[in-house]
Length: 180
Image (cartoon, rainbow, N blue to C red; front, side):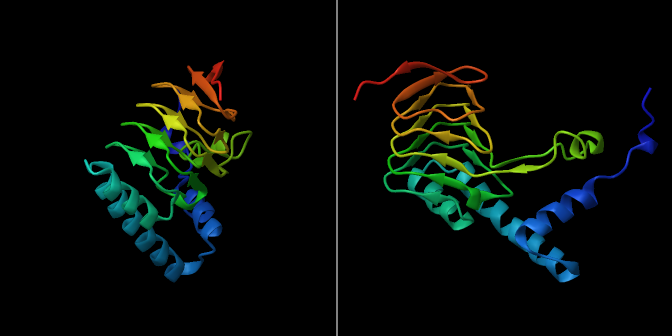
């Protein structure tokens, strides 16, 4: 049986990793980081449940997400809450309801994994122009979804998807090339 009292609190480690990433230090840096995340969370919350795609796109851009022209975001899209500037979305991209895009992964409460083979990973996500991310799909850190590619509903994209492809499953795999 695991004695929970023996487990080390990883919060200070996680906070330091994020502060280091943003170049913050000390008490003032901690305050700046908290204000930054509060602002980002408020903008995300406005975008998340909005029925207006244009409003959602504006709120996500204000958070720092790079978004091209003529994109359509359905309600309930989640784009990384800690590293929104690491997400780049091209022109004419569609994001379905309950799709999620993460620019980081972090076993934040497990020091054994965090200090072992599974440390925090922060890596850019690129959704190229014309891509369609269907409802419930998840795109993880470090992935590029190709131009005019389609990610099927509830798929989990763990590796790059080439241009003009349809990807399905968990993990997502290419099942068809789209003729162009």
